[in-house]
Length: 457
Image (spheres, rainbow, N blue to C red):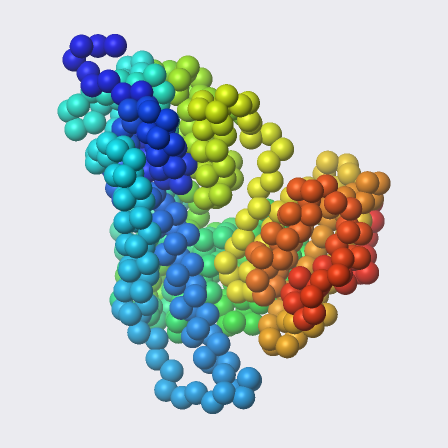
């Protein structure tokens, strides 16, 4: 180690959902640990992702139910959405979560350094004029929103997933570029707050990773909510305050809006890290390449969370932490191989997904059976008057074990999680079909869905 540098056992670049618990675990194990963060403690999830968006989704759902009050026999009048109050509620919850993260780091005696860290050589990181050295370095710098190459877009005021949550008034007409998870959550949210909303999506279906029947049902639900959906639509020019020229299958359309949200994907925060100085390999998009042990191409350097590519979910980042902790501190040999990647899209009704889709299973040549049932067949959903959506479960035709599921329905994420637990236990689908589940619950639908088989292998 250089005499001019400060010595640590571990340096963590980025205070995300892998980096934070790892810093605490390392410090608790007696390792002198530095955490370098250029923005807010807690990373994307706490500050700009899961926590604030789901807080605002909850506010939007209250507005939605209030408008539906008469359907339940509850008469309401004078409904008004106070967007500034929605924002303040969001900010308060984010600040509470962030403070909790900061307190845990402080209690663990982790040195928190606020600044932009960059590699200055093997096992060396520079930040704010300081040079730190450590045997272990962990990259947890996450992602940011991508800006598409569209003529004139740089001259138009844009919103991204962060800035849109800081609005203090409801947009009159929100244009949303992108029909993925982020775009659809905000599209429905702001429609419920009172905006007119148009979604412009280049693909032939929304949510390109999903089966066509699931994506079509999502589109039907959003259009029922009076959201305009343009598929196979390519924005080619932006101009004026907010005006987009969009090529569609029916010709070119000129769309004028009051606000424009860009939700066309995300890119890794790796440019400022100076990775080339130490030979850390990245792919063509800048994602850090890591193996199943989360090791990069350089000994002692690990990549955690979204920055390494693959599933960009908080729970995956947290599992990355558990893998590294197990291997470095607990003498185990854990990997990313075979782990489930569940996720929930927080449109309403939720889309909970785990395991293989029908398309993926067929591409792999699996012999499958597909159980499928509309939410209109779920007693609890009928009682709640929340019958939009469907359940779809893919089963191995030979072993009778569940390969994957999509639950587009009220509390779809919770139902998906119940199915995931059955998958983790290696249960046959018959264990759910024949289980004694409480009535009336949403979980009771797991008895009935397996009496509704679609196409086989």
